[in-house]
Amino acid sequence: MKKNIAVLAGDGIGPEVMSQALLVLDAVAKQFGHQFTISEGLVGGAAYDKGGTHLPDETKALCQSSDAILFGSVGGPVAQQHLDKWKNCEANSILSLRKLFSFNANLRPVRILPELQALSPLKAEIIQKGVDLVIVRELLGDCYFGEHKQFIEGGMRQASDLSLYTEEQIANVAHTAFRLAKMRRKKVTSVDKANVLAASKLWRTVVKEIAQEYPDIQTENLLVDNCAMQLVINPSQFDVVLTTNMFGDILSDVAAVLPGSLGLLASASLNSSGFGLYEPPGGSAPDIAGKDIANPIAQINSVALLLRLSFGLETEALSIEQAVESTLKDGFRTKDIYRPEAAKDTNLSLVGTQQMTNQILKHLSGVEHHVR
Image (cartoon, rainbow, N blue to C red):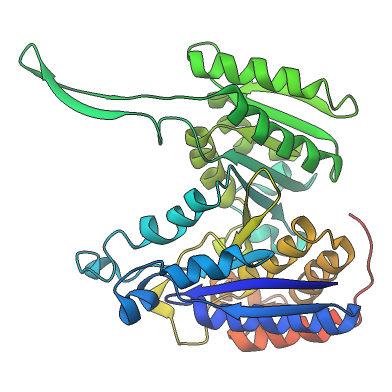
């Protein structure tokens, strides 16, 4: 297979974890006989330093001519957010890319690995059945894109935010969720607030209609408050969770803390044609940039997600994920997932960014491929 990938490393730890992820991608290409052409572009503060803009036209053109986008992270120190280099950096870069390519669905896989159960804030008896779910969040509708206004009426300050959805927006993201469920355990949980909100009533109606096209998929509806509770008390019940922009924003952050570190997670943003952008959700972490302590696993897992969803390379994606799991089984830990108190009784090794990647690469060539 020959594919072109736009690589936007960005700021903070972005470039150093991206370089490690590209080593893994190169190893997979050689092992399976693929040709991935990597073209790097500037984004975020790195782009601003060169041209005074967070998302240059040449970066947009690069992405448009590629088969997928591998994104790092953007943004600078909290104390410098008032500077032009960092002001509205995320909105001008990643959010602009979402708008440019009409990315309508964000996928956030969440797994609690057996080797890392002690890191989870949940009790062992809650997660003993395993946690492996994906939150599919709609990205182009809801109150984030509706009219926002503040006004004074009757001498009182008031505000309103319009939550607007079209049936097409709902149908598009629903199809994404159901297609994903066919690749997994064949269950979709649609989350809304249909007992109160008109937009949620339409959401539930359209999802029900789309579900009829996937008779082999089990479908259920949950109110968002109940879903938030169930994610904490019984996350093992979920496979694919389909929800709106605002509810997805909240629920994906709830689910993200379950594994114990954002440094383990990947995410994907897809449009209706299947074009995708892949990134770790943890941020640029400028305070640890350049210290060889950042966890590269989130960026590496983003590569696996790219291979699976954009290129249909399931075996290659699994080989990466299993190499990561084998490395963790061997006891290698970056600082964010290393617990000194656990190391007293177990064979854990604290390693840096490059050492972690080296261990993953060692396992990659010898990993046994199997479908979960």
